[in-house]
Image (cartoon, rainbow, N blue to C red; front, top):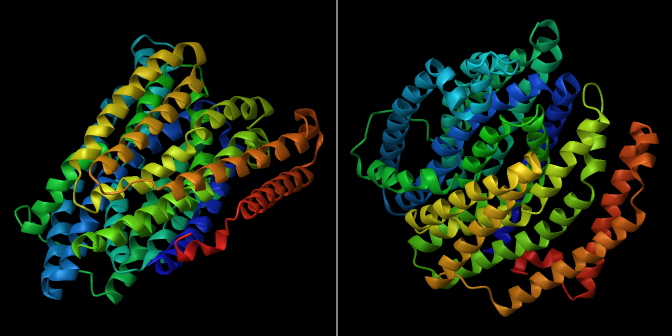
Length: 519
């Protein structure tokens, strides 16, 4: 079991690494083009709304509800019944997402007013920031059709993942990054408003991702003619599971939207600082957390369908230990190396040293929640694989309400940094509630061995942090270095940190390469 999961996880991680690296290249190009000013704030805002809905209708709630039901059909039903389910799901989802997309395009000013309240208020009162509201409304009309393409891309990815074809869907986001990079290099420089060119790149990237999946669906005999099937038993089961999951699985995204709303009332650049911080957070989260969660959900679903209780718990334990092994040093490294990473990646063109310092504060705040974000990705499938979406919803509501309270408490004294702190605090609460629920239900309990493993990763990470702090150059020294020298210094620090962590883990008796045998 663990050997197969390890292989799948490595494939997803490798494909995700390519996508994340290109994603960083994309953000470097955007930072060089627009920095962290008004244009960047508006573009990130217009890109965030359809991406939030993507998590609801596509990769988030839908996938968590669809994969367990599809797995059950593939294990127990005929191939024709599976194809019928796929046709009904594609048709039903297609109609819904088409309506939502059309509403989003037409009602873009209303959505902008809803999620960018500060800009709308400025527009009503004829203040300078009112121009952001008008520009964001226009750009949202361009980026919103991305939702339609990415929803069907996610549907195709879920089908392929359930059949063990993880690499295809993990590689697909590469095309979005290529499209945006291409738009930034060839289209935006020739436009009066370069951010509009980037919005066109987002929409084009969605189309390319959708088209890329089709040949693989044909090969799997999973390309079907969409048919409306609201009352089909499988569709009914999926939407029953999905409705509560719409809220529960996307709590972190809802929290980010709340951050955006509050940030629209704060100083110019707040949305951009949070965006660049979140992008660096997403790199280890996608590389480790989401990759492990992606391969665990189908495995857990099969264990549940086939009533393999011990196998279910051991799979959960494998996921938690893998997260601790990779997530603990990633979290500590992200906090300690926040400024150097931002300088190496973004400090050029319109992105200045001032922007680096401002973004580093929110990055450190987000970084404190990285392990919690990763654990959520692994603990949540423990519910969805058993077709229980109501419990995570209850915990999600508690976490979201808590995040709102944290925002109100921290936004005034700490500004946008307070919003990042609040998000990390709510993630910790959400992860704690998810584990508590699994423990109470007798589904998964952290063993003494796992608890000891946690302390080993914590102590090894502490040694790594001490080493990094000791050898970390001063800010003046970083600024004085040329780009290549700065990049090499950062690379050496990361390498030294990784080696020190691994050596400490080995001294504690842990052999990381034995993860394939269940650690």
